[in-house]
Image 1 (cartoon, rainbow, N blue to C red):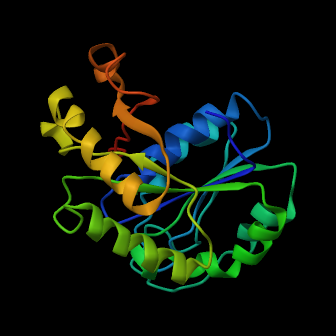
Image 2: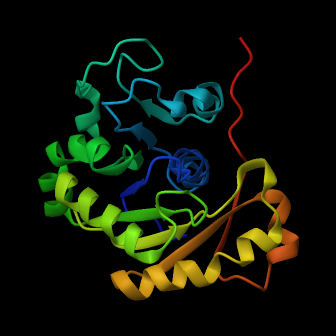
Length: 221
């Protein structure tokens, strides 16, 4: 993966952005010492990026989230250190944008600066098996809503189609045509197909640009 300085992940709720963001941040850290991961969803207070806090901090990755993350407070406030994403040009960042257009609203506060620097990718994360995005047309609608709310254009697609614990290699293979249909409709390339590490051997050579992932696990209290 050839990372730009800022990589944004956006898509429908439940598309799996956070798992990809965490894995990308861990990979990016191997390439750039000054690496951060930011959770830009200031609407939903239950930030799943925090589930990997210990692993990220142990790797030396800066974690930027709302001060109200994982609390019962729903306060749409952008943390001040979020602006380090655009202010510190030595820092490479993976940004987990909130789900749909409502979650992308915070992106609008940073979009002009991101666009002016022009060193970013914004990937649409898609999952064929989510009930509200079963076809290319519904995915395109989500794309348009996010671009309007976030005031930033997508540059590519990540196919993260899965059925959770019921996912198998056949399930992933059957999603390739769906991803291609979304690509044709939107004019965006499919840059990655993200899969759990255990499927890599079975799918290698059958799907281009596989991205292996270690899935997040919630910490035990």
